[in-house]
Image (cartoon, rainbow over all chains, first blue to last red; front, side, top):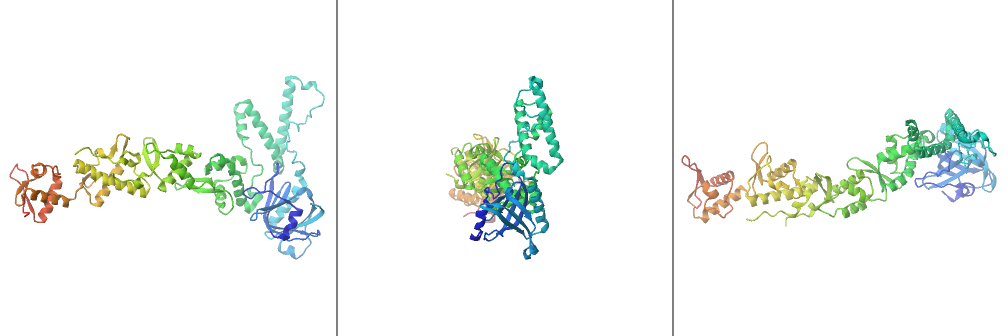
Length: 399
Length: 177
């Protein structure tokens, strides 16, 4: 990022990135399309500057991000400030790349024109352009901050300002409930008719799910169908799952970053290490739909080697796989185990190690095996199961 | 001859579990081989039968015992080192040579010299449990081992074994002067 790109800092807003290099989205903001290898430059606007080269363009329903992963810089343009998009004049540039002109208001300038160019496959760029068109048309950002869409207030019967006798008593309450359910049903039907509309309704769905869950929890365990509903609505989490569609060839990279972001807090509460199967379950549960396959998960983890993320995939000798916070070194774990294994009369089993290290027993066992393989511990296979002792064999001698 | 003194690590449970890690296992084997030899020497025990209980291979106070696999492995290691021999093809009976046959034969010669029997005759029984051998290591020697040692002396021309008259024990005539 040279000094010639200062215009970007003046005209565009700086976007915040997560630890794994993904832009932080606002409430209700959903990613629609990603395209890698896009340049942005400012033209015809009385502003001088070098183009922003080869970044990742992320289109959401409210903003357009340009992210340069390597230098961890990100800029965005709110779509609300875009007034016009057009195909460029035929020129030398458009022969070698696909381009698009964006006109809008930015910073102190009432009218600024940005030129996006992309040197890859024209069809990917065309996809982006049509998505951009759709998003600009839907103007989703207008409804976003008003996030607390309450189905009950959206119901057909507006609460009247003066008291209506038909609302009195138990039948009144029941009627109100009935109307709310009908509206909910209508919402669901509308939503499922059009998948695009569903994505827009996604925020509403999340709130609805939360409400239902809260209600089910307070009502206690009811009939079987309610329990089913409860299970279905259980963990609605990530509102913007990175899908193969929106990220194309970038799928694994973006997934990898999203996974790295997600796994941070569960790792902390699990003492720094989680079995890969547990991560698979947690991640998919949070995604809700657009579940990822085990292979996708493995590939996403393998990509971490190339990305600068604070987590790593750990392969144990036994073949078990786990995800670990990078800072937890092996030596530290061994040192903690050795302090525990003081007593040569009882040794240490998986359960005590798990408690001491703050990880699941299965992982504690892996740590014990690992320390044994390195010569710090020896094992006792007795009637109480497998227990580990300091490796006294090393210095043992006949007195 | 007092009670056998077990080493301190005999009371550590891992001592009785065959260690999977190579380096640790080798150290464990070294300790067990040495222990077997010392124990057998103390108790004048020559034969270990894998199909029977052998008091050395368990520690009741910590409730641990060596597995069959471990016992076989440690004895086989002794055999490989030349400090023991299998007495059967099935490798179930093991002769523990805490003294080599060579050493036994030297001890017999020493006995002969100490008792001025360089040209004398002794029955095998006498060598095993007679007055001459009382107080020496030869007392209580296994018959099989004794015969092997004497055969070695025969090869060197220092002795000649013979069968006694009907009902009499085998004997050996020395020409060790």
